[in-house]
Each structure stands twice: as C-alpha cells, then as structure tokens.
Length: 339
Ligand SMILES: Cc1cc2nc3c(=O)[nH]c(=O)nc-3n(C[C@H](O)[C@H](O)[C@H](O)COP(=O)(O)O)c2cc1C
Image (cartoon, rainbow, N blue to C red; front, top):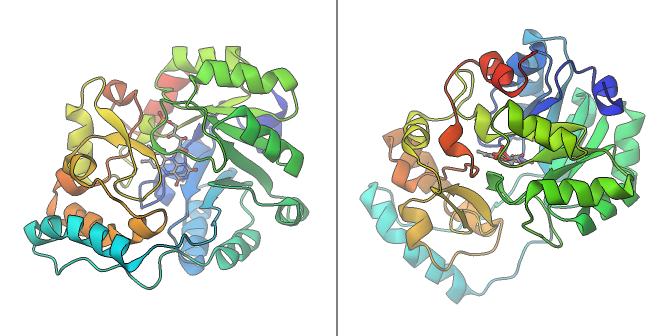
C-alpha cells in the first residue's frame, strides 16, 4: 500500500484510463471503483451539465472514489482558408460514401474549459486528471481546497518535472505503446515505458502512474517494479461489457493482430495511437488540433451509427492484440489477481 493508494482509498493499484467520447460510461467507472481500482470518467467532450450528470450517475452506482478527466486547452491555432479547404477536400469523398453533406469546419471547435473546470469543482470527484497541458498553480490550489487530487499527464521527463513544479499530486507517464492521444504538450520522448518510469522516479519528486501497453498482471508488476505507484490502463478496458465502445470498434479490436496500430494525426490533428484504417491511410493534410478533431466529428459519428470501422477513430495501444472481453471486474482481475 503506497501513499497514492492510501489517499485514493484503493485496494488495487490500477486506474481505468479516462477515454473521452462515450467509452468510459458511468457503469464502467463505477464497476472499476467498486472492485477496488480507480475508475475515471473521460469528460473532455462533455458539456458542464453532462459532466455533472455523468458524475451523479457514477455516484448512484458506487460510493467509492473515482476520477474525472479533462483536456487543457491551448490557444487556437491559426490556419489559412486554403489549409481549411484542403483538409475539407480530403475528407469530402469519405463524407460522400456515408451519404453525408460535404464537410465544413464548425464555428465551435471545443468545449468551454473554464465551465468544465467549475463543474468539476462542483462535482468534487476524488481526483481530476488532465492531459495536453498544465493547469497552473492557481487551479491546482483550487482543486486542493475542494479536496480534489490533481493528476497531470507527461510523455517525457521534462514534462513530468514541469507538472511536479506546479504541485500536482501525481503524474500519468505515457510510454510509447499507449493507446489514444499523446497526452503531453511540450516534448514527447516516445520512450519505452520502463525507461521513462525509472528516469522520472529517480528524482523522486512526484508519484508516477504508468501508462501504455499494460495488459496483464506481469505488465503491472513490471511497471510497479520499475518504480510506479499505480498503473493506468485504457486498451485493456475497451472490450469491457460496461464500456461504451461501439460494436464495430469491438470487432476491429477482436480482429487486430500484433503491430496493428499506428501513430496518426489524421482524426484530430494531434498524434494518437490507434488501429490503422482508411482514414489513417488517406488523410494526409489534417488541420492542427482541435480543428481537425472538430472537422472529423460528423464523419466519426455517422460511422459509429453505420457500423463502419474504416471511418472510426479506433484508438488502441500496442497491446491491443492481448485484449480480452469480460466484465470490468474480470478484466481488473487479469491485471491484479487479488482484485
Ligand atoms: C480509446 C482511448 C481513449 C483515450 N482517451 C483519453 C482521454 O480522454 N484522456 C486521457 O487523459 N487519456 C486518454 N487516453 C489515454 C489513456 O489515458 C492511457 O494513457 C492509455 O490508454 C494507456 O495505454 P494503453 O491503452 O496501452 O493502456 C485514451 C486511450 C484510449 C485507448
């Protein structure tokens, strides 16, 4: 039992990763927390009202601690009309295939972060984890005042040190095998996980939550052995019964062999790891994040409705071929047999 486990009242040193976009349903979050791990609600794409509602739905299912996760916004990138037109033109044939009107960049490209942050303060989950940037000392102090732990995301030693200076309670360290978006903002080492854990824990400034490619009990033991306090697993929970993963996504995961993932900017404009498909192969000139993310939203929603995995963002880590179906608590037991 380490300090982080004690503070988060965990019986199992496993965090179920937040996965924005409807995968981390209240049912999944609650099932993991109820089984002794830390469930996390991926709330980056939720409105403040939806965030509070989802948090209440978790609380209706469990009295145990859980986390909420947000994306820290950056200044909106400047793009020329020609760049927008090029990205829209590349997407147009895919829209046509799904019977959608031609793509057009929406006016509103991301949620109101300040309002989301206020909703988190109101909800008071055990922890707020965040990716894509720094919250700053003021917001971290506000969280502490509300009894909410702050957990940043780093992809390198440099980013981990910056978060430690800001006063976060823990850092999620993403190794190169991790599924989903690269969560850093300044410098991505794309290092192998064990190397990254050793490098960051050596300085001992901040507890580490290790993420990326952790799919079974041996992986968990290796990460803890390298110095991590907890592990965070996303891909391992994608096929959980309680997860909101669409059927076509589940089938693609079940069929994926080793080496099926690529790092791509095609869907969102930020590098993310997922199963290769037509979008990752065909979209070569994406706009910067969050513009591309907003531009491809309609395609992804229509693809999910139509069950067309070739147009879905199939975020998954390099361990995806080792993923299993089951309930969240069964999956947690494969990660930590004592769960
Ligand atoms: C489908 C999917 C969605 C993700 N969404 C988020 C997110 O909303 N916020 C976040 O901080 N990390 C997100 N991640 C990254 C995870 O926090 C974690 O770093 C990653 O899943 C670890 O690698 P693994 O997938 O090999 O377990 C996502 C990962 C996946 C697979």
